[in-house]
Length: 104
Image (cartoon, rainbow, N blue to C red; front, side, top):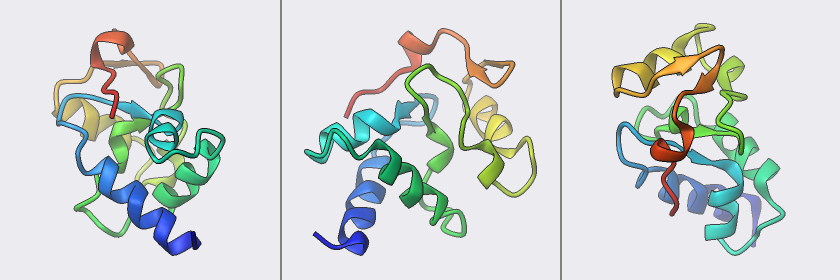
């Protein structure tokens, strides 16, 4: 599978994350059958920030931390987008992460 094909598959999964919920890089990799590719999922999301149809802000690390926030325009944009959807954030971590977690 080429990098472009993998990235396209990542975007397709990310687009299904409901507003107000979050998923993780690892869960998305597992959904795609490549459980060891969480980092590559992150690379795919870093490459898509000019496409507003892909809700990359809904993907956090396995501990609920906004590790991808520095890839968004504006230092606090990821947090703001999540909070606009009703996800509470404290110190760059999703509050009540388990109840907000969406598993593809």
